[in-house]
Length: 68
Image (cartoon, rainbow, N blue to C red; front, top):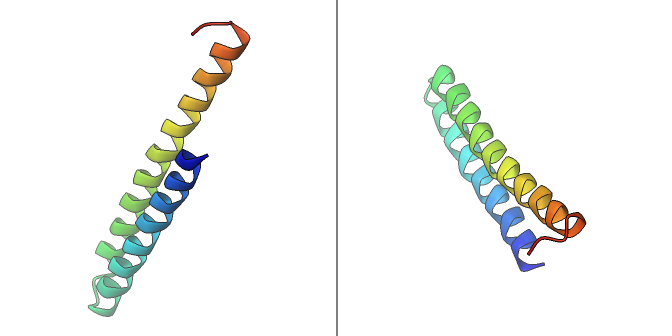
């Protein structure tokens, strides 16, 4: 249960940091860099989510195949 909350806080933290960077870059007139920063943040969150889904499938596999 603790791991689930940690992942949510990690994703929220990444989102807040990316939003701040995006806002700062957009106010400076660097909209291309702001878009790139948002894209990089999305990719990082996607990697975290894919890793979590992989762990979930490994646990499901171990339950149904009776592996330790």
